[in-house]
Image (spheres, rainbow, N blue to C red):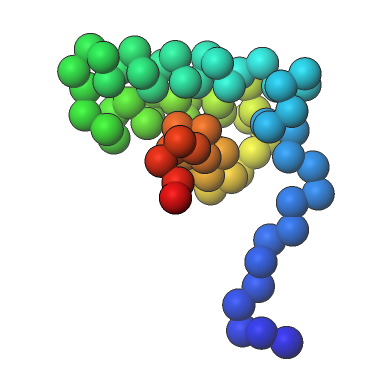
Length: 77
């Protein structure tokens, strides 16, 4: 067994647009803050807060990973 373990995602409801309507709201919050001249950290925090409002049972780590996947999806190479 490896010393590193991967977390298995059984259901990623945040990527199911039929079940999760907060993705556009979180992205709007992020881009709105950036457009208003806020720094990256502040804009991310706004998006995290929107996501956490809709998904209060998700861990902080899972929330951050989900939001960052949405925001940086086009930047992955």
